[in-house]
Image: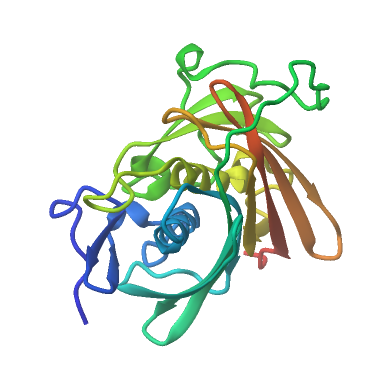
Length: 275
C-alpha cells in the first residue's frame, strides 16, 4: 500500500497517484489523527463530480454526501457513474479505503445558460449577507474542545468570525477560505470551496455541551443556486436537536456578493460515557 505523503512532501490536502487519492496531514479531523475532517472528502467528491461531467459548461447544483464511516488518513480510491441529459448530469460516486465504503455522493450538475432576469425580483426574506465581510473580521473561529495541531480545521482552512460567538451555544456566522490547494496541481473550483466550507456548520453552531454530548454529522446536503465568487465562503449556521437522538444543522451560504445556497447536516446525538 502506498504511504500517505508527509506534510513536508506535499502542501495540499490531497495528492494523486494514478487512481489513488493520498490524503496529507492537512486532511485530518480534530478528534482522531487517523481520521479526516468531513470537509476534506466532501470537497474531494465535488472535484470528482465536476471532473466526471461531460464536455461543456456544467455547474454543481446539488451534492448529497453520506459519511458512512470515518474517512481514514490513508490511501483512497473513487469509482463513479454518470447519467447525462441535455440540461442535467447526475454523478454517483463511492469513496473507498481498500474495499471498504467510507463515503458516497450523489451530485446533480446543470448545464450553464445565461438568461435575462427581471430587475424587480422579490426579496427572499433570508439575510442578504453576513453582518461583516471578511475584510472587516479578524477573530479566528475557535470551537470549544477542538485540539490544536496540524489539521483541516486549524491549518488547511483560514477562518474569520462574522457574527455571533462560536465559543458559545447558539447560531453563529463565519467566513472560510482554503489556505492550501485541495488537490496537488489542480485549481480549486468554486464548488470545491463551497463543499469544503459547508461541513463546518456543525461546530460553528452548537447547542449541547461538548463535555457531556457527542454530535457528529452523518451526511451533508449542499445546494448551490450560483457559484461562489472569490476565495471566501460564508456560513450562517443554526442547530436544532431532539431527545430522540437526532439533530440538524442548517447553514445559509454566502460569498462577498450575497447568498449562494444552503447546506443541511443530519446529526447523530449521543451522551458521553460518565467519567
